[in-house]
Length: 406
Image (cartoon, rainbow, N blue to C red):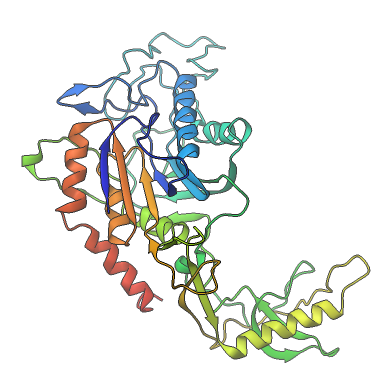
C-alpha cells in the first residue's frame, strides 16, 4: 500500500513508532518559492527570515520524524549548502522577501547568522550537529552525493560545487540494516606479494597459504558478496518529464537511485507480525571461504598477546579468489518465518514529485509521501500510480540480483 497525504511535516498524520525508514530532501534555505495554485504558500520550510530560523524549523521537523520512526529505524536527510549572498537571490531567481541582505557588507557584517558576504554557510553540518547535540540522534555516516552532471556555475574565484550531503541518523545503536543487499563489486586487487603495513589485519579473502609459524594468510576485506559501499556515491541527476495536463511547474527531482539503494539497505521488505522485527538477509558463504575465515579466527584466538589483542598477519592475498556467497532468504528473531508479515514502511515528509514513495512501491514496501502543496501531490500521485517510472528501479534491482551488473 502506498499513500500520499496533504499535511505539514511538523504534524505528520502517522502513529508513533510506525515508520521503518525516512528518506527525504527538505527544501533548501532561501532557494526558491514552492507554489500551490500559482501562489507562494505559508508554512513551507526554506522561506524563513534567517538561516537560524531555517535550521530551527528543520530540527522541529526532525523531532516529528523521531516520533514516528521505530527504534530500529533510520533517517536519511539530503541537504544542500548555500553561500551568503548579499542580494538574497537563489539560483531560481527568487528573492526571499523576509531575508533582506541587499546592504553592503561591513567588515564584520552578519547576514542573519554570523556570515561574511560570499561565505559558504555550512548549513548541512550545522543541522547535523544540532541533531547530535540537541536531539540526541546518532549520526552513523555522511554520504557525499557526487554529481557527475552537475550544473555549471559562473564564479571565477572558487571551485564549482558538485556535491551535496546525505546524513544517516539512527535513534539507537542497534538498528535494522541489510547492507549485504547493496554491496559493490570488488574492482581493484592488490598485486601478488603485496604486504600490508603494521596496521594490517587478517581480513579479506583467504589464500589457502600459511606463514612459517603455521598462521593462515588472508585478508577478509574481500567478502564474497562484494565490498561495503563507500561514503562517496556518484549518481547523476535525472530529467523529469511531466504531462502538461497536470498543470504543475516543477523543479528537478532527485534520481531514483538514491531511494533505491537506501531502501534496499535499510528498510525491511517484510516485518514479522510476531516479533516485530524486520527480516534481514541470510547469507550462505562458500564452504571453503567459511572454513578459511574460521581458521584465521581460531589462530587469532590462540595467539592473543598479553593485552588481549590478536597478533597481526601482515600478508594479504593477491585478490579475491573464486569464493562465492549468496543471499538465500530473510529471517527475524523468530525460530522460523511462518508468522505473517507486513511490508516495511518508507516515509518522505517533503515528498515533492513523489520519487521516494514511487521507488518504495516498486520495491514492495509501503511508501508514504507527505507534502503541503496540493499541486505537488497531484504530480506525485501521477508519478507513483500512473507514470510507470518505477519500472527503472525494478529493472536495475533485478539485474543486480542476477549478477548482471557485477
